[in-house]
Image (cartoon, rainbow, N blue to C red; front, top):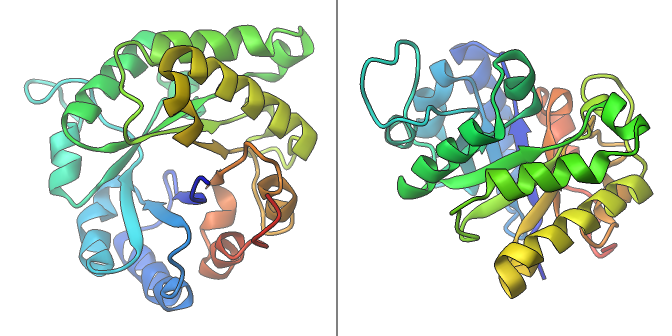
Length: 250
């Protein structure tokens, strides 16, 4: 059985003091939870400070992005080894906002995946479709392309996939559990074509307006193994409730 995986993506939120206040309030409430992978992805500026507080705890640190080169004249960029040096064991790659605002293609995403795996980071690869794509009935065409092109020459080891229905991010809309399971089932089937039996051990996360109110129904789906949480992860008590979803429903 796959271990639940709950990740907080803070995006461009929280100063260092705000991040440390969160961690101080949050850690005691989840200290006894060992049946789930718990991950926090602060902004780059807070990584090192948060990493120091997470040392020796059951919470892992993730970067929200990395660049696809190891070093050099790339002003403003951060390499996977730099993120690792700051305390990260995990990295989010290909988030819909990176694809939308920074024009990241599947080719760019793949290059980031390759260098991150070589650095020994666990990867959360984000894939998903827009409202226009869904309404045109091309959801699986887009997901299939993102999987095939994004995962070229990528190992299944330390790979996590997050499904982001873009139409449900920050809109208050959420895919129904049935829609989430349908998409996750397709993703799992596509992964089997690449990784065969190893695909069954890859954790699949849902990432579209996850809240304490809908986490139980989402986690009851057989192919939903966790969540990539945005806004609802910014408050310790809210993210705690998500992590403490009702077990035994899958």
